[in-house]
Image (cartoon, rainbow, N blue to C red; front, side, top):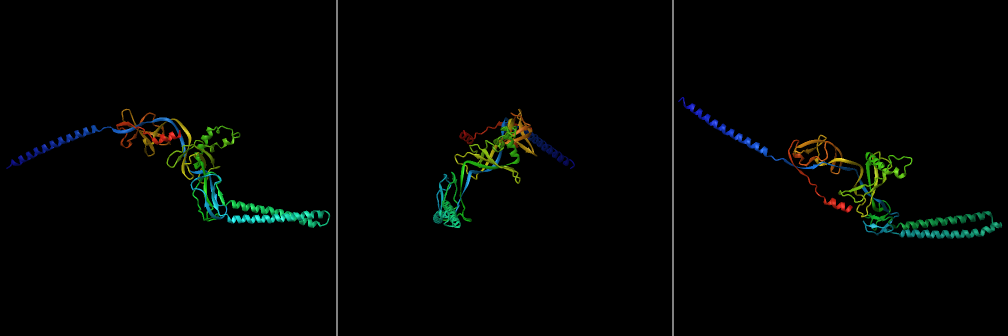
Length: 414
């Protein structure tokens, strides 16, 4: 009876030892397989480019709106009922083309009335001249008094003044009559009419401005720049023209206004396309607007195809500085942390090195690197989220895709 428990405990120990041995074998196998898995992880695939060294032209971009070279409001200068609209809305018209006709009956009556008044004045003048011609000889022989002669002279002068007044009234009536036929004052594009035949025009609240006629070749663009941008452009273009060293007492008028004559401007339209013709500034404010701190400028761009219309949104781009032999990288290669920028450099061992860089000006989709990176170094452009400093990667050069639209625009410009 006393040996049975000892046998049971010995059997239990044997089973426990066997279980521990099996678990140990499984654990060692799992560790070995994990080590093999870690060793089998391939390098991370990334896309890389080389930091380029090149010349960079810097630009300022200003937002503006387009205007016609001349935007002439077509006004009803006399009151009356509109009889006809004699043009195609939204078309180009020539100077002297008939645009509108206003009912001319009241003005014809005014002309007839003025003509009758002129005829009466001319009759009075004829009578006064006849009376004076009879009285003057009699006054010389003292047959009539000096008073009678003075009265005849006064009547003659009054009759002549009456004729002039009647002639002026007739001229005014004819001018008002001419205003019933509204003609185009310039060549240009005319818009949608604000009044239709049968409407009374020429008096508020009825239409006074019937339409607008715009000369759109060249097209103007009005934009505003800050005081800092004005100084930057003024100094740049005055320096190019030699104005910075010229004697102010001997500078010509064109040199004095060189800061207002910035040339080779580019026009970027609302869809991102670039207008194929360069422009230049033609007008500007005489001072900085103290309420906004801006300086207003107008530039002219050739518009021979008449694609640009007044009222369009546009951006004007002006060159101001050229940097030579600077290191340039795409903006998407940058990583930012608390205001510090860095790039991931791939060394000759395909190991990633995080490099803090000092940024210069931005332009297009690139940025100038002023410190921390040398030209020719390989940097990661795709796969930045997957790598860290010290990571081993499998770099593949990023091929630059061709842009058919850019090529076609370049060909059209050439």
